[in-house]
Length: 122
Image (cartoon, rainbow, N blue to C red; front, side, top):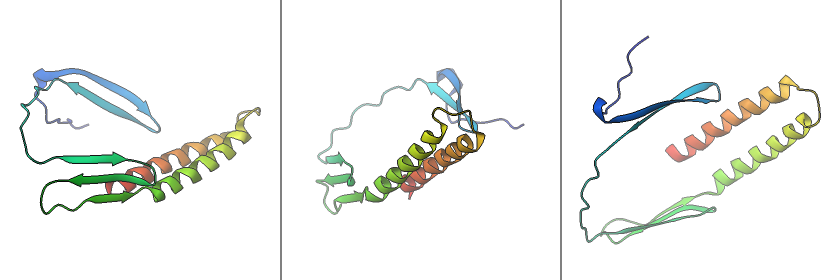
C-alpha cells in the first residue's frame, strides 16, 4: 500500500466518506475553504444548458468567440442505453434472479458512464 496525498491542509478536513460504487469505492474528502473576495470585472459570460445544444456560451470579452456544444451525440447514446436497459429489466422482472442479465446490466451501466465521461472530457 502507498500513502495517498491530497492537496489540502490537513487541519481544514471536515470529514472523509467512503462511498461504494459499481465495482469500486469512491473516497470523498470534505474540507473547509475560505471564500475568496469577489473581483469586479467588466467582462461577463452567459451559459445556456440544453439538450440538443448541450452548452451555448457567450461573452462580451473581445476576441473570444461564442461556443456551442452539440448535445445530440450524447442524447443518442443515452437513448440507446435506456432502450437496452429496459430490455434487460423486462427479462429480470418477475423471474428468478438471472446472473447473466444482472451482470450484463452492470457492465452496460459502467460502459455508459465511461462514454459520458469521455464525451465531457474531449
